[in-house]
Length: 366
Ligand code: IPM
Ligand code: MG
Image (tube, rainbow, N blue to C red; front, side, top):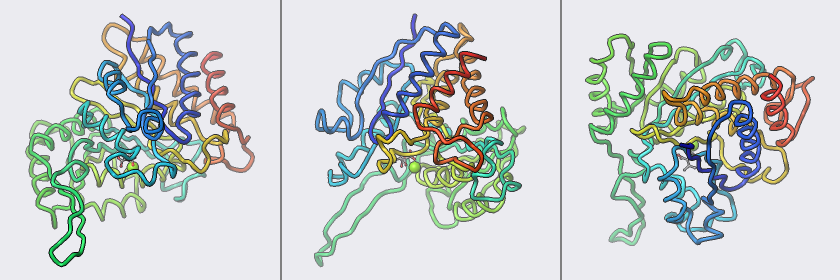
C-alpha cells in the first residue's frame, strides 16, 4: 500500500522551499522506487486567505490520514492584525495539538563545510552535534487559563499558565533517554526548578525515569545557564530535553551555532510515529518570492520524514533514500554552492531553485 504524505507549504518562503523539496522527492522516488502518494493543503496565512481560518477541517482531516506531513512555514506581516486565536501560527499549534505531536526533535549539526559561517569561533563548533528534544504539546503554550483580563482598577493584565502533568513529562523524558542511548549516551534536562514548581516536578519525574536508563548519564541545568553554556561551550551537550517554551528559545540559539538556521530540519512525532517535519527557520517574509531562500532545511526535513515516519520493517528503500538525500546535500556544499544565508568568500552564490536542482543532480548522479 502506498504511504501517504501531506504537503503543507504555508506562507512566506514556504512554497518556494517546498517546491525544491518536492523536486528532490521526485528524484528519490525515481532512484529508490518509493511508493508515496502526495496530497496538498493550505495552512497558516494562506489558509486564512482562502478559508478564513489558519487550519480548515478538510486540511486537518488530510493530516490525520497522512503517515507524515511535510510542513513549510507560516506567518507574515499580512496577517499581523489577526486576533491571537486566528493567527497563522495557530494553524501550526493546532496541528501539533490535534495530532498529539508531543516529541519535537531538533538536531543542531554543523556541516564541516560551514564552520566559517558560525558566529562562534570554528574550534568551538567544529563537529557540533546536539539534539534538542522539546516537549511540544504542553507547558505554557497550551496551559489554561490564559488571556487578558481587566482588573478592578481598570488596568489590563495578561496571563498564561505553565503546567505539566507527570505523564507528559514522563513520555518526553522517555523519548530523550532513548535518543541519548542511540547517540552519545548523555542527557541534560533543562529546567528552572529554583523558581518554578512545575519544573521542580519536571526534574523529579526525569530523575525517576532515569532508573530505566543506567547507560545514559543524566545531568540537570537551569535554563539561563543552559543558554549561556550553549554559546560558551556547546560541544559539552549531546541530548538536551526541556519543556515547550524553553525548547523554543534554546533551539533557535543552538541552530544559530551551526552558522545557519537555514540548514536545520526538525521532526514532531506522536506515539504512533506519525510525524510532521519542518525546517526550524520561519517564513522569512522579507525574502519571500525572491528565489533567495535556502531550501536545504526543507530538503533535510524530507529526509527525516522518510527515515522516521515512512521507513518500516517491510521497506528499507525510504531509509536508503533519506541517507542519499543527506549525502547529496553534503556534496552540494562540497561543490561550493551557497545560498545567501551561508555564503562565504570563494563559494558560488545560488538561488533557491538552483540549490534544489544541484541536490537533485547529486542524488541522481551518485
Ligand atoms: C517554532 C516556532 C513556533 C513555536 C511558532 C511559529 C508558533 O517558533 O516552531 O519554534 O513557537 O513553536
Ligand atoms: Mg521557535
